[in-house]
Image 1 (cartoon, rainbow, N blue to C red):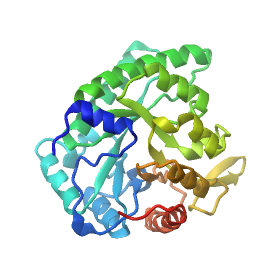
Image 2 (cartoon, rainbow, N blue to C red; image 1 turned 45 degrees about the vertical axis):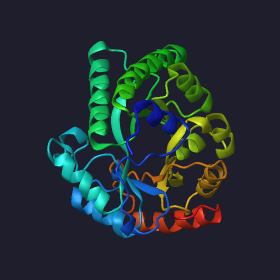
Image 3 (cartoon, rainbow, N blue to C red; image 1 turned 60 degrees about the horizontal axis):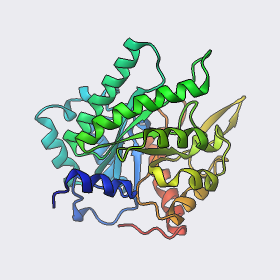
Image 4 (tube, one colour; image 1 turned 135 degrees about the horizontal axis):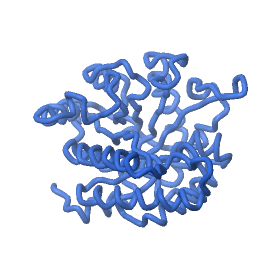
Length: 308
């Protein structure tokens, strides 16, 4: 069944993850879990698909492939190869949950701002070609010497432009709770200010708890209506900073985050963002990914979520 753009966006606005690429029923029941390829920076396309399938993940968040962070330059995501890529995903019963762009909306310099907006547009166009519902971008930073208010206004304006482009493409742009924008108050101001059905939230629940210092239930109460995707990860203090650790081994209330989402009827993916690309000292994906799949499956079962 084909969805017109109005119906598509309305469905997304209700918080449903729409798998535009059909799931193959031969894949068996899976929990609604995904991993970001930030956690496996050396893996090529074939291995990403094989491991996701083998470990029972339902979806993949693309944040680089085999070291290439600009997804528009990845051979498997370019030109005529896209049709075969969509077939490969469907044959394994896998969905691309979203594309992770680096585009940030805080930049003031006109030339740099245009470069960021251009990346955002390119990723939205790629998502349209792949049939992917969401593209993640950043508000990112409050530069030194500027007030939070003036930067917020610039971030809103940038995301308004991204949302306009995304709406024409049948895609939704997500702002991640990240950088200097991890507090519910700021995120709600941005989301309300943009005011588009083509703009919503990727809840990085680690950052709102560690940086924003918000209990999961409070964050969800403030932002839940906008949450379409999640980043879940665990950490603990180490040498004045934080070290990412295997799920359940740290002090981040990941199980509570899952319980809050499930209890509210969240129907997106519970996404594992293992930051191996930026922190090479943490465990390899061969260790972290199966561990997450097992532990998060236990958390989901306890919260009453069933494989589908």
